[in-house]
Image (cartoon, rainbow, N blue to C red; front, side, top):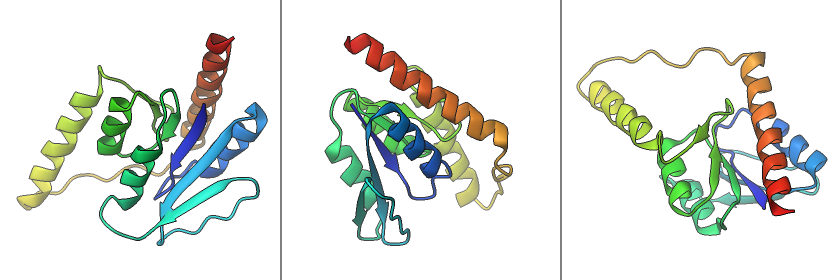
Length: 149
């Protein structure tokens, strides 16, 4: 088991890396050339900037039961299809039960924007969101470790 982070615009990279170190897990950061990461003892894969280039690289690396951290619903759906366990930046777990609804809401929002409508953007990130993510990642890694024993 390892943790793969879609680091393009991800607000919890450092928190995820710290948890992985504490849990003794390998972590891989995947980003495009618009982002720069240099963290000791962390594999950073930088791909050319382009539509979904980091996403496709990440999906091609997934092994069953890897944990993926992303806020991208489309990437989450592809990761679920590869049997990864997927968390968003707030600690919500993407599942087969909720991904269709999330993708549908993304599609509807895109249609509204393309027809000239405006959507309210996300609120400023809170410390509670950071804590929820950290708790979810710790619980998930401990759950997987105990299931592997």
